[in-house]
Image (cartoon, one colour):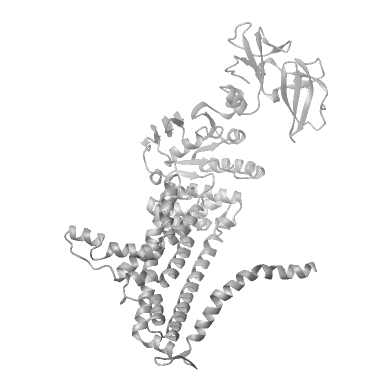
Length: 285
Length: 351
């Protein structure tokens, strides 16, 4: 009796979560996967025949390939910018005394409490032709610059939204660092910069890499920001899927794009994860 | 003055002074300990010498060069931190090599010097390990090798043995001192452990509340502590209050013989004597009688607490191989008047 209970208890405990995951993630994913092989006809809609035509279209049409390439490029650029801004930010944060540390930490995490849509609209007000940024440019005699509905606008807003996801893991790994280790490097003749590069940075790479993973994944699948700041013309993967579903009504093609984005994202992230783990094993055991 | 000179060194945090007016001259090749309870300013003093804490006032000179405001990476001192502060992402050899790389020492010479340094601390076999794969004692040796490989004019040790267990601590005391003797590096060690300070140093600097209380050779510090605080902080000390009479102190109805230069007849005084300078006799055979209240066996010695009419007295006897007096037994306490000293109650010079 008791051994039977011990055997079933873990399953019973895991069941609610597993059911929820199956119902809300696995089933829709499988349905989407199946849908992506269905034939679509503009006159009669989705048919009960299967085809690989959607995948062939996506992989050969330069329109789709361009959007994929842009998605990859902007996500990578956002990740790089987040790393270059977020890592020093986390370092400064970790060297701050109370109460400033708490105040700045709140300022970094605070924006997460505001909807991404609201923040995207905020940026569109700032970056628009009559927005604050262009007012300043005009006042400086630089003329009006088109920022809104360009890749620049998307990257600026993405970096803003994603920064906490970089700062927090880096900050966490800095917390584990013995502050005397940096002092030891100075006393051995390393300048402040060399100590940072040779001693501090290598020890926060795990934080930096896991932060990059989150930022890249979220940026590559971001919807609200490209939709609101990229305009109708400048599409990224998520907005493309939305368009195929809601405007073209070609659900199978949309499903095929979604599956491809998922697979590409998964491959990149898994490859990255391997690098992270290999590195962590080597330095931290 | 000395090779390394501290002149009126002071560190204030707001109103509070962590270190006030510390002046000290250290001779070349000397091993100095800064000894004191936690919060006495010894570590702050060390960090000011290292350049990690900016002094509020005073001067530090090294071999005639004023280094008071020099950046830590320009001072070239070797420092062993309490936490060892090894670089966890580098191997033992890379850790030791770091300081040489910073000095742009050529590759071949670097390798030779790293090997020598690791041989010095008997770690040559572990050169390719990472710090996390080492025991506490091995990490400590890596930290020592890393600090010594750059040939520093001065080696600073911040509580180097406090993270080791008792047995290892004792071994490393002798080993550190041995290494220091062989290399001849001027060394300043911070410690709160009086036995460590006594056994390792040429001179001990006792600090209390940010000030230097006494600077002396270990033996002299033990035999002639400058203040009651030092007498109880460095070793154990019995302190029996009474009244000075010719030839001794009257306490508990007895005249206890002791040395008491400069005391006026009938003045209040305190007799101070180390536990190991008292002997046990049959009742009536000593200076004062008492009853053994507690007995502790310490391996190399026995320690007794004896209740007397003058107060509780600690007595330490070497372990001679036979079991001595038991708890509850009546005994007499004997000592020579030269080994006990009397002083005024607030500031007894003694031992």
